[in-house]
Amino acid sequence: MSAMKFEDQDLSRLSEYAALAESYIPGRLAIFAIVESAFHELLTAEPAKILVVGAGGGEEILRLGAENPSWSFVGVDTFEPMVEMAKVRLAASPVGERSVVHTMGIDQLDESGFDAATCILTAHFVPDDGSKLAFFEAIRARMKPGAPLAIIDGVGVSGERDTELLRRIWVRHAVRNGVPEAEARKNAQNFSKIPVVSAEREEELLQAAGFKDLVPIFQGLAIKGWLAFA
Ligand SMILES: C[S@@+](CC[C@H](N)C(=O)[O-])C[C@H]1O[C@@H](n2cnc3c(N)ncnc32)[C@H](O)[C@@H]1O
Image (cartoon, rainbow, N blue to C red):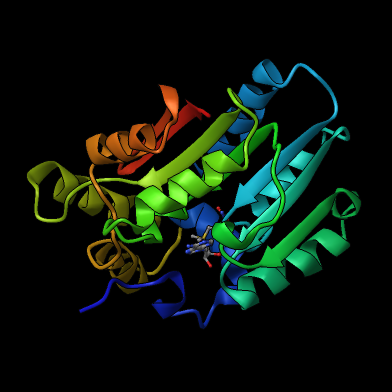
């Protein structure tokens, strides 16, 4: 059986994606605040061109762009409805003038020299059959040497004690945030169907792709984030 893709989930409430993601993802707003602060620390030369991989919905471009007028964004995402949502939301924001989002995989992007990149809750949809390594290599190939990638991903091996405990807590956390229990359970179950890998494997793959000096910047239950330098 092939791995579940983002678009294989129940997307009947896709228009509510931004609000739902905030209820589901532990520390969702902290993630953006931490990534923005990391880039403030690291992107000292203005202006900066930021690559956003998995830019569907537009959330990270809107959040990172709002108070940083010298940052511009190029996003890629493989799922047209999420790209459309990003375009609609960006068109209603001043950040839209500094942003472009393409429906394509990162390997198809004919642009490089990025000062920084983000990959938020996206790499965990890419199978670990050589594709995840190629995906990380394709990101790095488009970044300036030494530029920071902020990567946030689900981690953990299904069936392992700690992973399962974190996923059960995750369900309770979502319910506490107002998500109906059946929906919260289904969302957590989806994590056993998508190609999430352990934090150690994710680090191994990032390093194999040539990223250096990994620094953990976030962990909220089974969602982990790092800075990794191209
Ligand atoms: C959970 S959403 C996260 C979207 C956004 N980064 C955020 O945090 O709001 C995952 C996104 O990754 C996209 N995606 C999945 N596989 C992808 C791939 N191989 N390349 C680019 N985007 C991909 C999906 O279409 C979807 O828009």
